[in-house]
Amino acid sequence: MHTQTAGDLLRHWRVARRLSQLELAGRAETSTRHLSFIETGRATPSRQMILHLSDELEIPLRERNRMLLAAGYAPVYSESALDSPAMEPVRNAVRQILTGHEPHPALAVDASWNMLDANAGIALFLEGIDPALLAPPVNALRLSLHPDGLAGRITNLAEWRGHLFERLQHQIDASGAPDLIALLAELRGYPGGEEAPGLPAPDQAVVPLRLRLDGHDLAFISVTTVFGTPMNVTVAELAIEAFFPADAATATLLRERLAVQAD
Image (cartoon, rainbow, N blue to C red; front, side, top):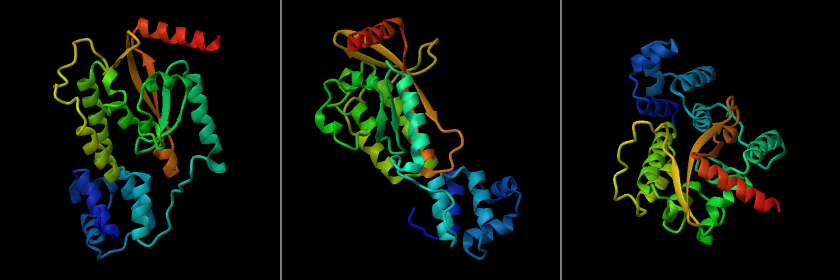
């Protein structure tokens, strides 16, 4: 998006959401004529109208601020560094979730999948990783699919790649973020995509992450946690990726590792 007016940005998001002016006007309870005037610059939307249309279009908070600025209004949603004093309650909540999930791996990531925090269990995934991939900022998707990262130990790599690509594409569709578009292009260039993911088994509920580690076959299912009522850009873009054992053998190994660490 290289356009700058509020109308241009509104049109971009309406088209991205595959809505006609008539459909959006109906949802927003306004007239098609008024919506057309906003998009063409013949009418300046009020601050409340921008926020109302943003709700209907499910525009990310960062982009809502951008539209407000383009219309001449101050941003509504703040953006604070995670290590700032104002974000202490958020940091504490994230740390509590991560610690409470041990010995199972869990990490917190931003909108670009850069790792912000992790628990002790994540060390299981980092063993044998190229140190260059662990230099900040550590990108969780690059770490997972890079040939010098976790990819060499993922036994269902084609399936896992397909799952991550689908998630990343959904995120791109929702946000339009250029850095995510570039990241997806980079990840698609890594080896491991030669084999088709295949169809799920009849009783398969989720896509597991299957690893070969020190002679053990491990399996995990992942769960994503986000804040339910974010009013801050940083909080809205924060997610916790938690991994649970998908079978008894994996659960036993994690408990044994925890016991060894405790000794």
